[in-house]
Length: 639
Image 1: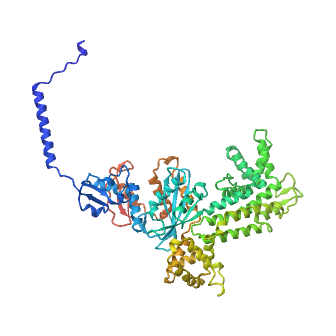
Image 2: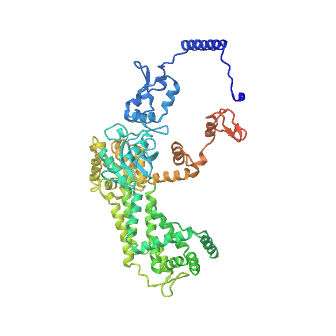
Image 3: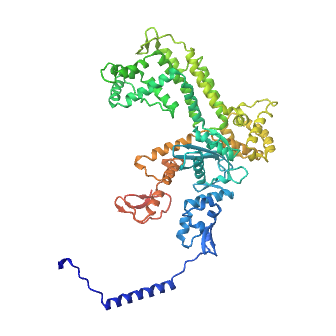
């Protein structure tokens, strides 16, 4: 049993004495260090580097004046500079300088004291601006449109992407103001009677949480800022107008069901795709991809699907005819789609709808341009309505193609054998009129707000293409519309109303020299010249140029985000994602980008960088802008 017993030796007197002496020596050294060490204290010169820091002589702490000025934001648990920091170290000052709380409070402070708004380090003085927001389930991105003080052109900048804590209107508003704070715009100073930029327009999509007049985002914004113009994205309005017009036409619903079915028939079977590709090679035809018809982008997806069927009609029907003769489970499905595509009424509706969608697509593309003005919306809609009306009496290009290929006596459509009744085509029949009239009615209803004040007044006041030419009518034309605009935005132009009305007459004389130019270019030229004759009217022109009608650029931000944040980069932080979107949207073209500075910064930003298995040497200073790295040997040489 002795081998399982541990025998310890009791400490002797000599060991206890040695431990006691060591402890006394350690205490003596520590006491000496406490007496001789430098006591950290507040340094007055810190206020020159960090103007926001001050010292509390009573409590002997340093605090941030900016954060204390906005307690609703600055008084958070981890912000020691709000209550007072007792650790007088430069590292803590640097950390607070870059903290999220301090950055937001600083933007509030700048806005409150009239400091120019900043974006990526560039000072931008804004007078009026429009807000454009696009929303997903948990994320929204915010853009701001305003007239640049340097170029006098309307520009749209990306504020940021924020994650929503709540999906209701208050949660969306909180996300909007958090994104605006990133470019120095604050909730407290967006009103007309406050110094700094003034919010004039809020442009959203058609979600109920956005467009609600009482409890929606628009309703809450208008209630707090009564001079804000609530706008519904016109591209989204156009989409809804077309979808409203087809939902009650049975022939169009049947055609859409056929298109969706054909997409699923080929999309779900690689074998069928190989077979139809082989048939296309036999016919020496370029096989077009048949896309799905999506509800979100109905106009674009429907148009692409119809054109794909139109281009490959003979190829598709040949393959469906062969598949229908089989004895497998999908023979009846192929037979059904073949019957639809070889029916004369279905083909007629398909070619008619392609003509209608061609007209709508032109308008949709215009609504997605960045240099579009609010006064151009109504004339473009009216022009589209006239083009649609003409389709009731004069067939379009695609309908003429159908009539040239259609042979009802022989039941042939070009080289395609038709099935079912083949009656002579009466282009001006009731069905054609019903489809066209339904589209026109939906457009009139959806864009009715552009026929009401103040939106219709922008067209009357600034669209010089429709101004009368005689001297008797020209002086009074547009004056009532200008008064309506000034009344709606009364808090902004209250003191300069009479001066604006007088300068409007001078504008009519000046604009006569620009009538051959486009409306956009003409008013850019007026803004760039900055004539003293339009000192007060220029603010109204800036307002017209700043109104945002479309959220197309917001949707492009989501498209960019989808390309960058893939499943392989799902852990990409919000900060890095936002920085990459800024580079993609507002950065230089790839062929103009010089990577040398970025690589030098990366190599020197941290110790122990390894490239190609070798530790990178210390960064050498470049002699000029043309010096760049040899990334294999880490040497600098002349380009």
